[in-house]
Each structure stands twice: as C-alpha cells, then as structure tokens.
Amino acid sequence: MTGLVVKGIAGFYYVKAEGRVFQCKARGVFKKDGVSPMVGDTVSIEALDDGSAVINSISQRKNEFARPPVSNVDCFVVVVAASKPEPNFLTIDRFLAMAEKNGAAAVICVNKADLANDAKVRAIKEAYEGVYPVICASALTGSGIEGLKPFLENKKCAFAGPSGVGKSTLLNALQPGANAETGELSRKTLRGRHTTRHVEIFEAGNGALVFDTPGFTSFDIDGVPAGELMHLFPEIAELYGQCRYKNCTHVKESGCAVADAVTAGGVRESRYRSYSDIYREIAENRR
Image 1 (tube, helix red, strand yellow):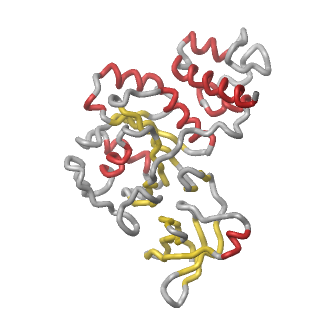
Image 2 (tube, one colour; image 1 turned 90 degrees about the horizontal axis):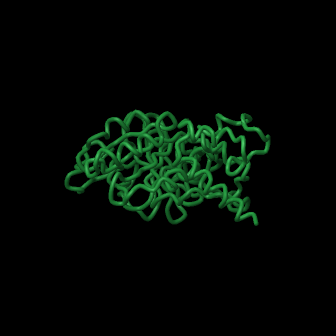
Image 3 (cartoon, helix red, strand yellow; image 1 turned 180 degrees about the vertical axis):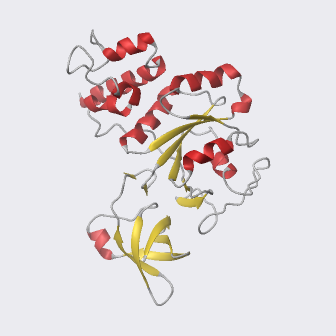
C-alpha cells in the first residue's frame, strides 16, 4: 500500500492509506542508511497481522527540512502581524527565500489586520506587490480566511513566521467548524489530538493538507553561495545578466541593473535591503 505519513512520534509513524491510519515502524534498513521517515513523506507500507504496519520504502522527496522535520512542502504561508509584533521585513524575506530555495510556492498572510491602521497594511502590500500574493486577514474575526483558502487548495502547506503573529490561531480558523472567537477549538486531524510537541498534518478542506508544527526556524543560509542569492528574490532574478559587470553582486557596483531598478521603483527598497543584508551575512560567514 502507498500512503502519507501524517504524524511521527516516539519512533512510530502514522500513515494514512486506503482510508485508514496505520501505526507503523520503519524497517531497520532506514536506520542503517541514516534515513528517517518524515511527516509529509509518501511511503510504501506492508500491513501486519496485528493491524499495524511497517514502512518498506520512501518516495523521492521534493524538499525536506530538519527543524521541524517535514518533507514535500508545496506552499509556505508566511504569516506576519500587521501590529503587535510590528512587521520585520528582513524576517519575512528570509522565510520567502527559504520557500524559493526549496521549490515551494509562497503567499503572505497579514494577520491581525483589524488591529492596525491602513497605512501599516498598505506598506506590507506595497512591498510585495507583483511578487507574492498578499492576503489580509483576522484569525479572530474570520475576515480574509476565505481569501487564503484558494492558495492552499490541493497542496501540502506549512505556516512560517515569528512567534506572536498568530500562526496557531490562523490554523484553527481554517478548520471546518472552528470557533475562532473563543479559541476553544477542536482539531479535525487525520489522527489523534492536537499537540505542539510533534508534527502532524490535518485536513483544511478542498484537498489542503496543513502541517501543524512547533514552528519553522528562519531561513538557513548554509549552503547558499552568495552568487546564487539573487535567484531567491524573483524580482531581482529577473534582472540577471543586465548589469554592467558579469559578476555583479548587486550590493556596491556601479552600472548595477538591480540598484537602478530600486531607484526606478521596480524593486522595492525594503526587499533590496533584505537582499543586501543576507548577502553580507553570507560573505561574512565565508570569511
């Protein structure tokens, strides 16, 4: 049977296959090869007489992450609070770069939009206009939640963002029948009760599968060459080859098409600052 790993805890993996969830152990060959199943994996399992099963093989992964241990993320929802905490564009851009690095789509969800003035929300929207979709929502009131759902449809989705922005409240609001006003929410998971101590996938309707995780760490620059960073910023990547110098870093050279685009408004200044800061971080780490 082929199924999806929907939860992993204490050495057991819970695999949904053929309409039910099997408690599985992984074959010893995985440990020998230094490989462990991850939530999000498509696996082949063999049912045992006692009703449990064993994982025989793991399909090739689209991507994988160590913190938290998940795989095959199709879409990141980068959550930012319009207020409390104040939005940090560098943090947002690091998460967006993480999505690009791992071949995942990204959508920005501005939560707590009901608590901020229009100028703050507008500044966030303008920073990413034409680059990433921006959805304004309030998990507490339910406003904007329907606008987020089409981006999750038929995808494995993960929420990323700093603490305090309301990721958990948004996850709860996506669930059918959730009571976002009181916060007393029962999760419609594929198996078991909600807990933040392990990773689990739950269904959010329209084929959306959402990773419920303790939270993603920020974008890890390890393994990203400085010269490749521009390709993790789509609007900067579009300018590849247009600079005066072939090896332009887009940080300090004259005749830089990216710097010219910032002046002309084609690349937002906040995005360029994030690119420059991350580039210098990579260069400093190399030294």
